Image 1 (cartoon, rainbow, N blue to C red):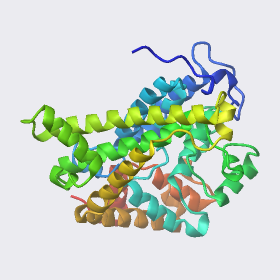
Image 2 (cartoon, rainbow, N blue to C red):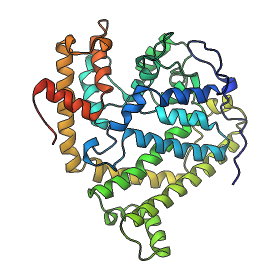
Image 3 (cartoon, helix red, strand yellow):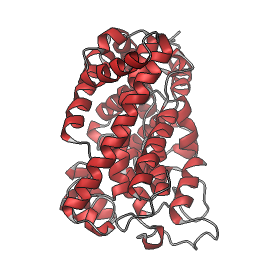
Image 4 (spheres, rainbow, N blue to C red):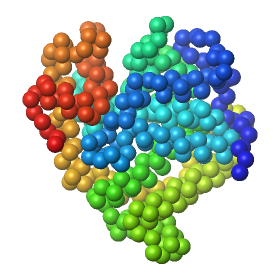
Length: 379
């Protein structure tokens, strides 16, 4: 199979809306390639290797982390984007950066920080990812953050409340939050990353869930999307069992979802008469599943919520993780001297506390909690 030429509706680095702080072009890389490289070399990206996806970092070496999840989203996104003629470098950049603002301990961490920050503007991991690349990374003498292109920043900001959009719009008129006020869409590359994120986490949570023993293949037979490919696999390989059966079932499921997205998105683009990247932004969401696959994917997601994310063993760990982060926040909030000097912000001390905690890895948060409280909540 040959690569599809760049489509007229793809984002193009030569037509980028630019960076907040102007820079000379790189001699050997496009703006989107440069953005990707800045992400890969950032401290926040390296920390993702020790941040929870579903299973805590110390629970097993083979379970996904935020880093491996981001890599899987990038792989799926590039595969789909290549067939659609989209810009693969922008897709990879957004995919690798979309979870940079995630807290330790997965969504439990976000919920705790949001609760702790209710009186101070709240906390949302997606906004935090933008904050990381715009402000918190400290690598360059001329500016805070990574100074990414508009298109990369737009893709990182996947969703945004009206309140937060108004705040960001006041700081950057016509910027990355404007579409949440006007009803526009991000680039097709950004839309693709959103859907690739869903495909990736559904698939790898099935894999990790079965490997952990918290769910079984027999339970998954209740889910039509999984059963279809499990049956297909056993029809062709009737004696297959264990890890190979699980892996082949997931591989077939992923492939079918990729082909479904390509076909559905091509049809949507053609039906809407999209010929330019600006056309795509002005249209409704275009990167999509077919209706049947959307229904099947939603059913799988519901199964995982009921049987994996709310499993008693996961809930038990979640309660301990919440205690760790709540204790840390209260300690730092009550005593600013406990924060490292380069993390302090006397103008907004609560936000500095949230920034510092959100940047922690699971294991660092546990060490800090034990050091400051004397309590050891995990084995």
